[in-house]
Length: 263
Image (cartoon, rainbow, N blue to C red; front, side):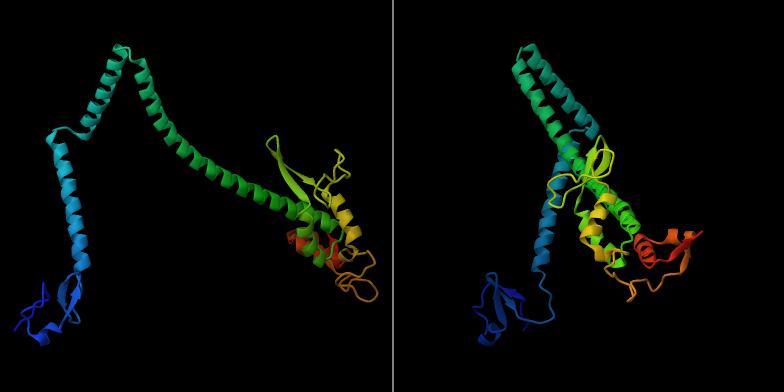
């Protein structure tokens, strides 16, 4: 005999056949392989049909008014104007003011949300621009001061990050400026600038005294020195055009090796 896929109860079925069913959600399902369980699909389909029915009902209600969406909005606006006029004619100015404040508050909240989002984006862009500008100053200006002091390649790698921590950036009158701090970071470092504060050259001069082995010509035998305290590459030359194409690290290495620059 043919067996049903789902039965409400097993009573009346032969005992061997009862063993072929398994209970699921209060009903007994024939335990067979290769048949997809469509319960979830049917449930989702039922929900979608209900949603579509409710939407169709809502649309039909609007259609029954015999008005377009624009005409309906016009009616709403006219009703609002009439309500305000009635309040004004009745002298109920407090109620009218409260209504306007509520509407203004709703609009302001919308603008505030939009403004805060735009403000967050602008702040992120500003911070990214500042970080890029700060990095550029440290890479080129500090790097140039180290190169001028004949830093060794190892010194350039070590001191750039170490000395960068002494530099504090500020925005003054809309312009980006930096201030070099004392080693403890609590006060501006005095130096040779016109305002009496330190320049990158002053910072590097201090570094030469503290880390002499990281600079050429200090008598401490930096990297690349032979036993006579001279560079193995001394005497080699490089054109000015080729030197200008090098990055700061390569320029520092060339100068540390006493490679001569020729025009």
